[in-house]
Image (tube, rainbow, N blue to C red; front, side, top):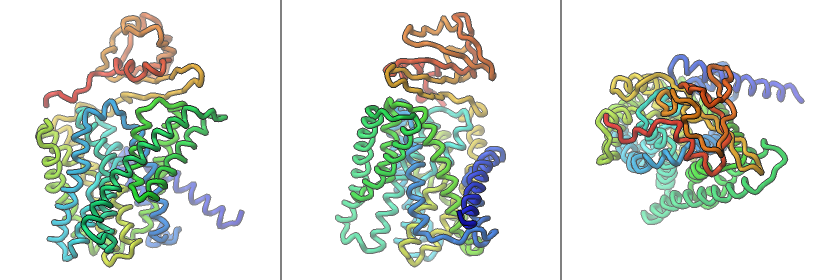
Amino acid sequence: MTSAGALALLGLALLLGAGVLATRLASRIGIPALLLFLGLGILAGPEGLGWVTLPKAGSIQVLAAAALAFILFEGGLRTQWTEFRQVAWPSLSLATVGVFITALLTALLARWLIDIPWLVALLLGAILASTDAAAIFAVVGSLVLRRRVQLLVEAESGLNDPMAILLTVFLLTLYQGQASSYGHAFFFFGWQLVGGLLVGLGAGFVMVKVLRRMRLDGSGLYPVLTMAGVLGTYGAADLLKASGFLAVYVMGVYLGGQRLPYRGTIVRFQEALAWMSQIVLFTMLGLLVSPSHLATVSGDALLIALGQMLILRPIAVVLSLLGMGYTSREMIWIGWAGLKGAVPIVLATYPLVAGLPHAVFIFDVVFLVVIFSALLQGTTLPYLGKALGLVTGGKPPPTVSLEFVSLEEGELDLAEVTLPEHSPVVGKRLAECAIPETVAVSAIVRQGKVVPPRGGTRLQAGDHLYLWIPQDQGDEFLQRFYPPSDAGSPP
């Protein structure tokens, strides 16, 4: 290997190591990790230490598309359909109506503040219309929050990314004159949405069949096959002129609700891949930034960011959730939970690649709006939740931690369950929990020590239970260990 190759590998190792350490630092100081990832890119770029030459936006866009596909797939994979049904209509409303309203109002604000053409303002609004799944999960996952509110913002963050991407691509075709008529434009947008949905469902169906019927030599090959499915689904949808991002997210949601062999291995692999994608993605995007150019647009970006946070996003939330039973305090918090992240910055590279006249301006404004959103909303969201009475405690133990180890012939899953504080079985003896004969409790881990499971063993909050469960009983049986959903609880 040449010296240049060795240095490249060393640099990649340092990058990934620094990214992992950055997640720990970010959680300690209470800011989204994306800020530190972006900082790594800026530091390594031409106006930092100069370790990396400024890449072309086109090459980054290809890698960013793959990274986003893995991030969206992982977000869909961990979406539990049984819980998603509780907030399906509100989250879909926020991801569609909310995205359109946010994009339009942001365009009006940008047009009023800055002398730019209407299509440029609309494009800027579409790019800034979505929330970030990674940032939302990182912030919300550290809170004991009213359940239906937490489910809503998490589901919305996964669903609205594809919608914002569709709207941005649609406006780009208008800007470039590729849509010859409104009818053609409407068909393009409709097919992106419907085609992406159909490709995602079809790919999910095929992937389930393949995973169940294949008998591979090792469990580690199953997540590799799943990764190939993600890339193949995105590529197939893109070739069909449908939304590849929507397709991989739908595929993830579909697989998330299915019984899969070596499910725990697949989920852990995809989680690691999504984290690596975030580190690499944000660092690459940081390389595109020229800090010396940001000062000229910082004032406009700050006003747009504050306008979105304080006025535009709350209006979109209220209009999207009218008549759905959400209280004013819940709407205030949901309105503030509009964190920006990877998708807006990636979408801001589209005008750069297309060579639009205002492309650099759009990228710089979007980059700064993401920074302001992470700093202002990401750091204050937990405190606002506590002030509104929606947060009831600190970071909980995992409410559901399933690690499935499939037996290819036994039709059994090994499930790990962490008992939350208000679990209905806390305080009961194991013999009082009505565990059927088909389920076996193999171990209880309490404060790092193994407690032998006996009929007289009294369960405590935070206990980790390991149970062998028949595959056709898993979801229904495990619900008895968790408190009932507070989806309809009063404020």
